[in-house]
Length: 242
Ligand SMILES: [Zn+2]
Image (cartoon, rainbow, N blue to C red; front, side, top):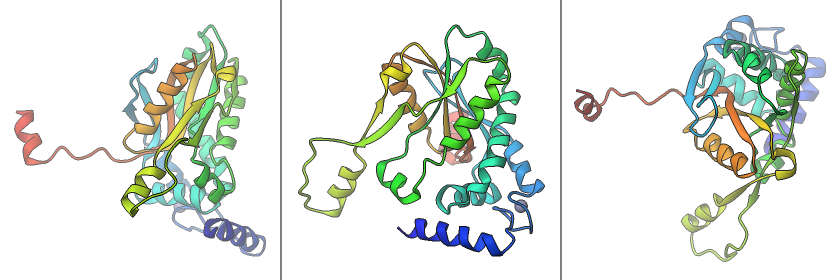
């Protein structure tokens, strides 16, 4: 896979060359202060079916933050784990989650949104897992009964025809994935969902649904970034708003 090769290459270069900021390439930084500031421009998105009803995100998925997230997610820049974990940790405090979590009457699980088998193969890692583990560790030091759990997985839908007649049909078939929740891990627990980028919110909603079906309660979602909300400055919306 190309991305695997480039991440190996990058790791090898890192042995001999000083690195630059994952976003702006400023020398000798994993993520420079200015770019790290983009992770403190908190936004929320609705998360129906969760206790708090929202996904909290560190920043908006555009410009410099988009570059940093992509370098980390798809180009193997695992050194970003540290600043991204710090950002999520700060987000949890900004969202005032610790007091809420401390009051819960069962264990809290930090559960990463699952990747499809193909993207996991391409990346060669569960990119959200170090952050989920770090967050659980940090919350535990604050007196919360919590651990990280890979409790959601995506599998290719079974029973689909292998024969396809065209590209469109094939594309439709490939998007047919099932999300599975591990009932043994989830039942009776509270869940903080963790994802990298919230776009339409479909993945978070699907995770919430799956977690609930497995007998757990989603407290809220957490994300590194959320895409900008669609502008309402269209003629039709202006009319409907008045
Ligand atoms: Zn920078």
